[in-house]
Image (tube, each protein chain N blue to C red):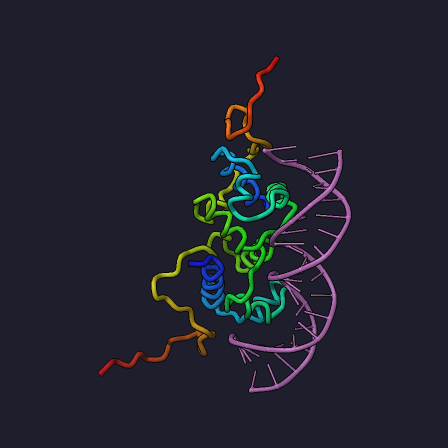
Length: 93
Length: 93
DNA sequence: ATGTGACTATAAGTCCGTC
DNA sequence: TGACGGACTTATAGTCACA
């Protein structure tokens, strides 16, 4: 498995686990929201320095990004609805 | 400690341990010899894909590149002249 | 809140060389 | 063998508008 994919998977895993959005993480790490999106979709080939910053922002060791995903595992594509980081939650109907 | 420095240290550590030159490793990994030199001197910020290739070439897990150097540790700057310490070890007076 | 294409600036990475 | 530099090409960093 390509390492880039593993990193992407882990970034998303940890981020979602923290209950924060791409936007929030990107902002904290000082990078663009759309770049974070690309990174998690494996369409970027990030440098070590960049991953270092993101790891620091997430407060994890860089090695956390190389954890092998369980076979068939999938990270959620978006944050679970239940979390409420912000924004007025409109009641359904 | 900056991760870039850790990676650089480990690449050199493993390479020297294998007894191969920068040039040989670079050639095998399909990268430029001067770039390998720069990388080990921490003057470049390599991408994940590249480190992946180097790890593969060295036949190690990528995580090997993130091993923390012991305090005060130094990698040799060059390969040892001889691979065989065979010479009779002279006792210290 | 995220995916995506287009874009520019900057750094990665190559290739030549010298010491 | 490896440090280092210059000129060069290509890829990534980083930003934006819009779906």
